[in-house]
Amino acid sequence: MARQKNMKRRRAILCSTFALLREKGIKNVSLKMIAERSNISKSLLQSYYPHKNKLITEIIIGFKTTILRNLPQASFYSINEFAKVKAFIYLILQIGMTDKGISQILESILKDRNNKTVWDNILDDWLVANKIKDKLGTNEQVQVGLSFVVSGGTNLYFKRKELNLSAEDISNIMVKSFMTTFLNSSDQEINEAITEGHDMIVRFDMNKVFKIINSMFLEEE
Image 1 (tube, rainbow, N blue to C red):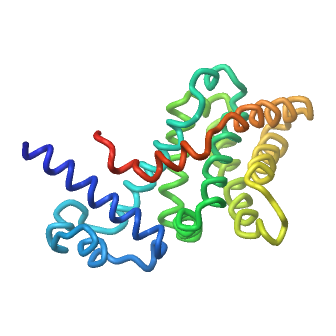
Image 2: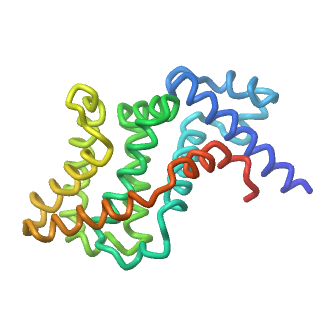
């Protein structure tokens, strides 16, 4: 019973935090505000999450897990590795471009070096867990390449309205940049990856994705 109560309270805290982050952005949310929204004392909140960064990390992990859960698993393991990366990037960016609140969270993460490091680590873990990383090149190529394309992709995301770029445009540019600059891939290899990625993302049900995101911390663990 005690464990169930603790898990229920953690979900309530995460749910309250996610709602506040969507309303105000990461920098404008304090532990005091989270405690008040969660109807608990600040000291009790800190017994679960001593620092806001720990909460943010758990939010990011939950968000990533939700995104991955919505990749079409039936065909996921049989497609090109770079198509998978394109699909993953697309989902993150499309969600940010569609939902103003999540856009605030995403922009805060990308602007803050500490939060961005968490995001980079999660992306790296995802590549390893799905046995994609080894197929993208050497460890050095992947680390340098990801740093390069994530930085460039971030700048494009911030300038998306000025440059009239969609989520798929940015994900295409990021994948093409990595394959061209760090792997010297042929035009045919690049086009195959981009096309496979497109075929994958057109099957995404974004309404379903948002429904799950809105309730992700309410679900039983």
